Length: 91
Image 1 (tube, rainbow, N blue to C red):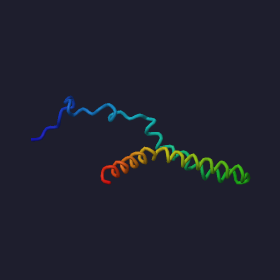
Image 2 (spheres, rainbow, N blue to C red; image 1 turned 90 degrees about the vertical axis):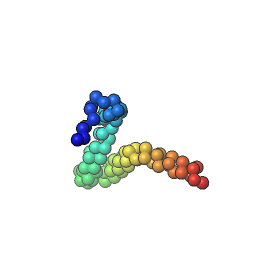
Image 3 (cartoon, helix red, strand yellow; image 1 turned 120 degrees about the horizontal axis):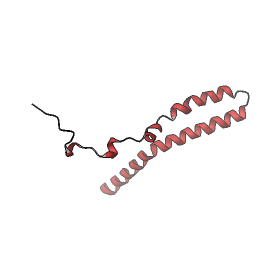
């Protein structure tokens, strides 16, 4: 009969970096839930002020794209370094 490994077994212990999650790391994925409803509200509430409406809408949209770039940037760096490693290794 199979037995589960003991939690006190040192070979079963995970490093602290894997077990603990920082709250700020998780909240950055919830930010789109804040600015997504703000975009239509800007359009609806500022109908009579088109210059302010367009400037505010574009600035919030630019912030959303900047935030998306911030979230994707580590994967782009990893992808580029792997591509460079592939080129160096096989060419």
